[in-house]
Amino acid sequence: MRIGEMVRRTGVNERLLRYYEEQGLLAPTRLPSGYRVYCEQDIDTVRRIRVLLNAGLTTGTIAQVLPCVRDEGERPVPVCADLITQLRRERERITRAIDDLQASRTMLDSVIDARPASPTPGPAPV
Image 1 (cartoon, rainbow, N blue to C red):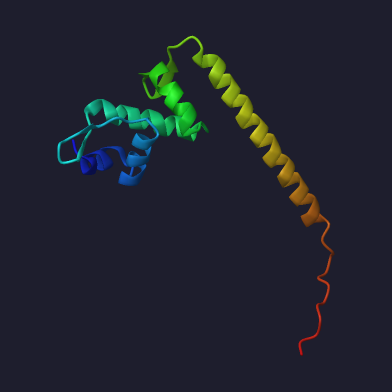
Image 2: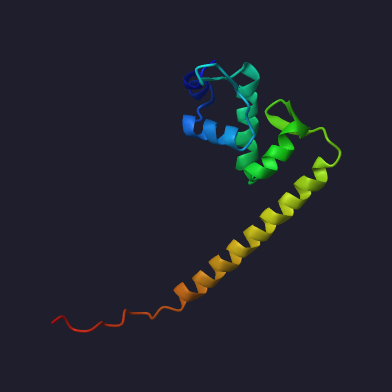
């Protein structure tokens, strides 16, 4: 199938499909004219990419993970022994990012809560 059909079947726009190809996540065949041709399996690959992106993984990590997962129903399941270790490291990275964001939110809350009860009048208009 050509890229337009791939867009319709996956809901992913052409630009993202090209980006996935640049990142080594997809490898459509190329016709002599340069057109990309996708196979049915590429639809599943795009779905896996989207699931892994939504899980917070980077495209670099996904490139390493994709060969080590297979589909079991609606979710990818690891099949390589060392993948679990790598995914745990990614989970720890995401947890640290969440902790940092929560600390930032707490700091903003304290600044917001410290506002004066009534607004301080500004300079008089000229």
